[in-house]
Amino acid sequence: MSAQDPLVGTPWVRRFAARVGEGWTSSALSPRVRKVLVTTAGTTVLIAGLAMLVLPGPGLVVVMAGLAILATEFAWAERRLHQARAHADAATQAIRRRKAPPADDHPHAA
Image 1 (cartoon, rainbow, N blue to C red):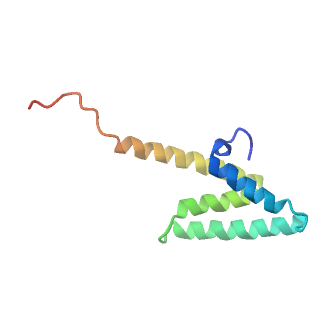
Image 2 (image 1 turned 90 degrees about the horizontal axis):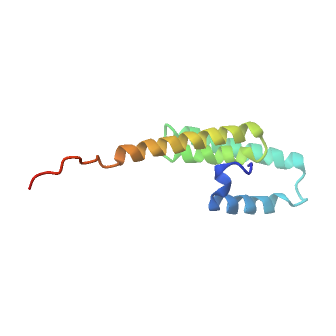
Image 3 (image 1 turned 60 degrees about the horizontal axis):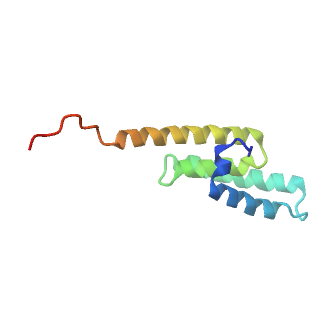
């Protein structure tokens, strides 16, 4: 993730990245093995998330988790993750605007 990424400032993302980074810095895994593991895990989580879009479950959250895993190795996944985050933020704002109570310009006479 880049320093300009709004996700970087999120505390849970920093903790997660630190934990994942500690495990992956071990010399026990070669770069090729790491890439295969990340690709397999990320693809599995992404496919599960896509299935959850039509099945019961938190599909969007799982799709973003799959993209986050893949983004540790692939630039295209990082770009898609940023796009998904932007769409999620826009959707959240739209929902909040709809749920906001209407402004009452005319007080009711009691």
